Every structure is written in structure tokens, then in C-alpha cells.
Length: 106
Image 1 (cartoon, rainbow, N blue to C red):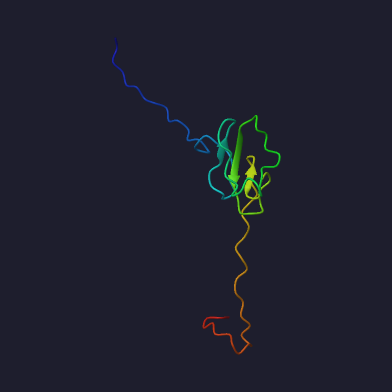
Image 2 (cartoon, rainbow, N blue to C red; image 1 turned 90 degrees about the vertical axis):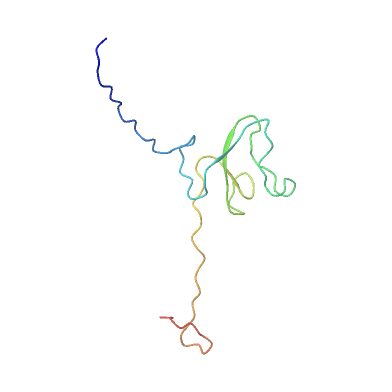
């Protein structure tokens, strides 16, 4: 047997590490539900039931802010959740008002 040097080829790094190749739009990693598992918590299955949730197939889903879900008030079913809303509008104080006490106001 001849002696030699073994060199390993570098392995490419996956573009999306983990089992799901999705863009979560800032909602965190996706969750998965399959038949036989308990339903994801909606806060209240009586007043906020799942709409259109197929109980015979696995689902990839995300928790969103209330009112943004597509199968319940705050659960998005699918790989393409909407982006998070922008930050709330900041405080504006009119410098002509006498009660405006912001020292570094423009």
C-alpha cells in the first residue's frame, strides 16, 4: 500500500441552516404541527378557532401579532408570513406649545 496525503474538499455551507428554508420576516423560526399532535395554542380555541386548518396533513406555521393570522387570530399557516409591522409613530411635540418640555426637540 502506498502512503499518501488525504485532503478533504470543503463542504459548502447551507444558505439556510436548519430543516426549514424559509424567510421568516422576523417572526423567528417556523413551527411544525402534524396529525396526532395537540393543536397549537391560539389563546382560546372556543373564541379563536382554526379556520381552514387541514387536520390530515402536516403544517408549517408562525405565531404573529394578534389580528395578523390566516388560520386563527395570531397563527399564520404556511412558509410566507407577512412582514412585521413598522415601529409605532413617535412622539411629536410642537415647539410652539407652552407645555412642550423636550430639551433636545428640533
